[in-house]
Image: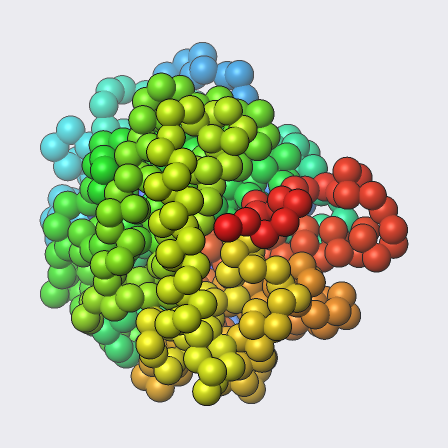
Length: 621
């Protein structure tokens, strides 16, 4: 049995995420953290990875949705004889509540109700901890549930459904439910100590109701009531699922090795935090009024980068540490045979110069909104500026972390320009005294000179992927986002036309570069939102921008989630899922469209709901 990436919904509790397919099968969960070994990884191997299935026996039709402004999932199964509803949630503690009693450290609850007629329910519970390598057996402990003990770790399933053992690690059951009857399931994980287990029947619906309330209360903080509000709120909720609450870090996705090209080898572990995404993410959070999350992310980022000063890593774990060495899991077959299956990510050791601009841009956004830089942060930023001045002429792996030869990437050059430009802005704002201003201004001038002379192709009439090159990269749509150029400048508009012409797909998506098109990779979903935002910010008309955005929104799945890429043949999600970078693109583009509409209606800028990351009286440098 297999499940498509596109068919999944996500649940989370601020520490990890579970994925549930349309047929009621939980196919993914890593506990206790995003980057922990799996408990269920059926998406990577249906037989060895582990699944937890709740679905009607025989044929059925499915409708599902999230509860409004919540990450609680409701799946409705219609069969000939009746209707069954499964509600799934990962309980979260309400704000201000600090564990008044001993709770399980992690929990996932599932509530099954027959709402009409009579339905026969199939249950399959097959946990396969540690990527299927753990052989710990299930033990029936009566009221304490089915327990799997792994040293000091304990996985427990409590349920009022009668289940029978199939083998040492598998339970199943077939149960007939009539209208009004319900079943309750609580799966818990504990690492450190005992927990008080509430009576199952009141606990499961109560946990769902409390979790629903927490999510709705959080969503009410979102300061946006403009067009596409449902898509914006759902994207914000998806982004919140990827926040590791104890540190404020935001992972790129909760999964590993879901392929960018099915059957291929482009399978990476995304359960880490990329500096590449920092400026976009901070911008989206601030512009939605989610200052607490934005400030926590900047704080995490400044802490993490301080640990490897003056060099920056491409990615860090949720506590700000470089990941351990990348490892292959040879025993797993991979999603649709896509191998190898990887855990951890070797890109963490690459040189990626654009990261310096991302980090400094994010810190600048914090200061623009009244934030404060302490002495350590100021020292960090000065050190990053010195590093950029000394190393920007070097080749690097680029934004896409190519594992091939290092090159002089245009985007990396522009982000080095951004790094120096924002340091000079922070100095002008009084937030960064004692800066070698003359040196930074001169290096910034030299960076622009190189980009304009050696990273522009007269033949193509476009900025190109790397210095003196002849290939394109969709990330060049972002030059105006950072204030390097105005969106209506002719070179930027010509680059947009060239990118759409050479990297566009019949489904009006964009490949990230020409190699991805030629090698059968999916279209990169964020690129479509970059194009729409570029048009909204002045590269085209409001009508063009709106049409581009609405077309891109069509590639969400039935519960509003996006992956990293889109299969150009089927329109379905590829890559790790759900993808923070894509959902950030949805938010930023919707806000850009709202601002453009306000301008065209004649509303004054101070009434806009956001301030753009690169906004300034004029393009700098």
